Figure 1 (spheres, rainbow, N blue to C red):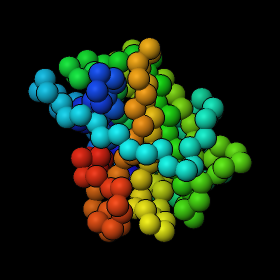
Figure 2 (figure 1 turned 60 degrees about the vertical axis):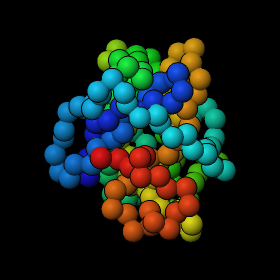
Figure 3 (figure 1 turned 45 degrees about the horizontal axis):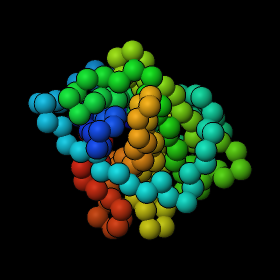
Figure 4 (figure 1 turned 90 degrees about the vertical axis):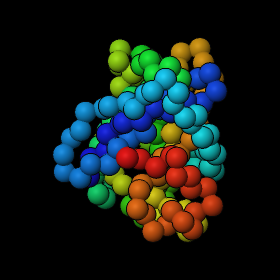
Length: 172
């Protein structure tokens, strides 16, 4: 499974995290859909499993089993300008629906490149009690407020039963 960024998001006056796009078996270039008025990114809870000081890494598959996913996106301003050096921190459950609260399996961060791009290689997290498959993410541009949100998979049967699920945060 390959996921790649396509749509611009913004939260208040802070960075935007391009919503990833789901593309089965092919890599698509990031294509922000900016018309000058991107939607505001919906902030969401970090949940009880956030752990600060994740390692600087883009491959989160260490000691994880599951369906591989490549998550590619772009961090943009509200005016669809790329944000270089923005922090993107990603974490998620393992294939059994558990979060590693002792170590850093399924956790990592990186900084966007000069064009605001980021890339993670990881697994698709499963549904677990009360939650649909999702990623947690924090994004922060240099000297800007922090955005905490979640990204959801399209077509998941658990989406309609998850009280936190928001369609506007679905990956494309």
